Image (cartoon, rainbow, N blue to C red; front, side):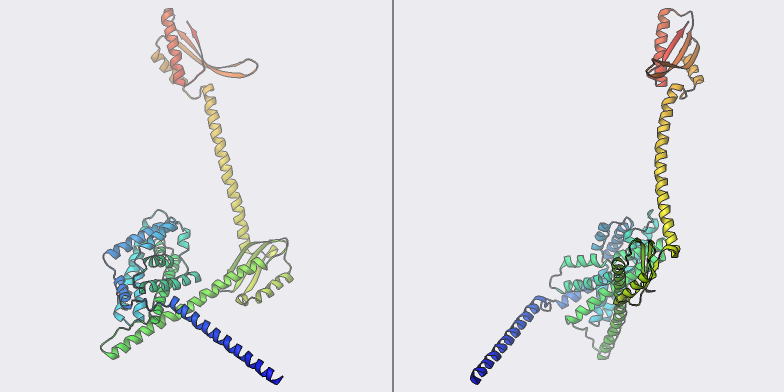
Length: 477
């Protein structure tokens, strides 16, 4: 029995060893597969990448005019809220070059390239803002379109797009044979031009909050694109610029490292801040939709402020008991992102000025709708009354001056001695009709044939003159 147990134990140990060996082999194969799939170092052309980036930094001649025209196109797209036009402008913009140059220059300790990148980027930004300001100053459309408002403050999504867009851009540039479609896609996604156009809109219309917010958004995008470029260049082992003087090389390296740290620390802080704010807003909305519910009460409006850590809910309907509100507050404290937030319920007799303002807005909206509808009804009635009066005037003779008409008749028919006009009301006991009637006294010396001709001619003339289909003429001698 002891021998059998020993042999069984040895067999179990051997089986375990075999499983571990198989697992190790699978792990190595998976690592090799992922390394071959994701490794970009072998297909990276470092020297050509540096040359291409330095070439894109240049800003003069063609690039300057391309930037001006693309800014005009983007400004028009923002002015009319056309996303397609804005995208088209971003495709031709040369703004990306100096930003990538800054990130690469810091990574390889190239102060000359860094200085040139900063100068060219500054010129590009100033020229872009001036061009946009001129356009919005002369543009007759001054409205705040959704496309403009969307570029006035960065969100966590803007930061993430700038990070991953910048990574995609520099990886595409380092590949042998640049992937143009990727670069164009990044140019669209990171949206560097619309914020600068929005800065111009704010300056042209004295809306400083628009200018500051849009400039902030542009700065965020530019910083994270440069930061992504810096990280990729370091990971791919781009060679450092060599200087003959070793002390100068060390000094340049220290300056580049300092600049990188100065850029990275605020960027990381900003990223964390925007992330926390976004999570707060998202969790607050989710909490209100799922928890703040009470039978007979309806949520009219909700606001959440990350800075003051307050969530305001305005409700109408049945009064919510204090115990229920306390329970909601306790549930709020269980959510990590909302732990320090305060829930304020506005309802019933405790309605604040905001509720009064909302009620006023609702009443104003209703009155405005009623006013517009009444105006339309009144206009329709006015048109109908005008038409009826016009038709009625034909029967009353109000649409002509009898004195003037009689003078014209005398000039055209000198044999008329007297003319009279009246409306003859007739009926056949089924319907009533009003017929314009003229009584004409002719010269008694006229022959019958000449009189008949004059009477026929007068009848044709008076019908045409007054635009009447039906009238009565009584001739007297």
